[in-house]
Image (spheres, rainbow, N blue to C red):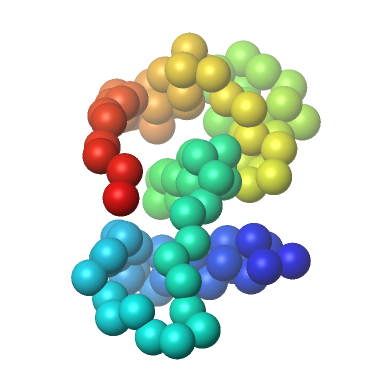
Length: 107
C-alpha cells in the first residue's frame, strides 16, 4: 500500500514536469525516514515515464520490440518488473535512446 502511494506521488510529479531527484540533505525530522524504492520499481516507473513522453501506447512499444503486450505491460508494473539489461536495451532503442548503467555509492 505504501509503495503504491509513493509510486502515484512520483508519477504525479513527473507528469507535472517536476524533476524527481533524491535529496539526502533533507533535515531528519522525528517520525520521518529515507525510503529506498526497489530497483524494479524505479525501472518500471522510468520505462513508463519515457513511453508517455513519446506519446506511445504499450501496444506500440511491444510491437516495436517484438514482444506480446502482456509481456511489455509487466515491465511497466512497479511490482512485477523483471526486465533484463538486454530487454532494457531494446526498450531504449524503441524510444530512440541508449541505455546507460552507472554505479553510485550507497549512503
